[in-house]
Length: 264
Image (cartoon, rainbow, N blue to C red):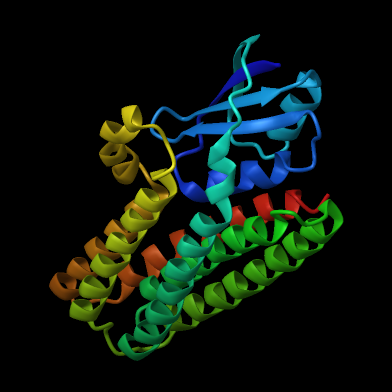
């Protein structure tokens, strides 16, 4: 058995980890995956077929670079037994906050919250596909990935249309206080997801969890919504909310395109 270490420059969030797991799931040569989100590294334990593995990772366009390949010993890889439970936990958290942010976003008239709710839904799709794929067939996984990817794009396009409508029309200002407290709760939820997904890692990586949290795209998005809420209040304009909504919708589409790559 061998192990190959990849540097994945765009892997700063558990959703990228889930995407990589799904992508490599159908390769028989892959025996185990070890993720270091803080260091943006993926260690693949495999039996030959490194070129096939490298090509599969490259198809996700996450800024991969193969660092080294060396001999490795098989240690049982007991971590895989907890994968389903961890994925179910983060799926439920993300889907719950999709509902919370979508509902409060509609009532608070905040496109930032609505867009962030779709980002939560996008993560739910990723974890859901991964959860369903544990023990499932590759063909079924690809079909679900295609459906989820197109559904995300549809929601994002509808969101863009609403942003344009609100930019042109005269709208009531978003409720900045609701934007702030809901985004703070969402930030804590994302931090909890990161912690849950790292529970199975070695204790030596525990000191890295703080840096992982603050480099996560989801945390940055939550912070962006909070900043937009403050700017809405001080500028008395809905433009900051529309701007952050547009940015998040673009990120949702980017995530959807990555999911669609899994269906090919």
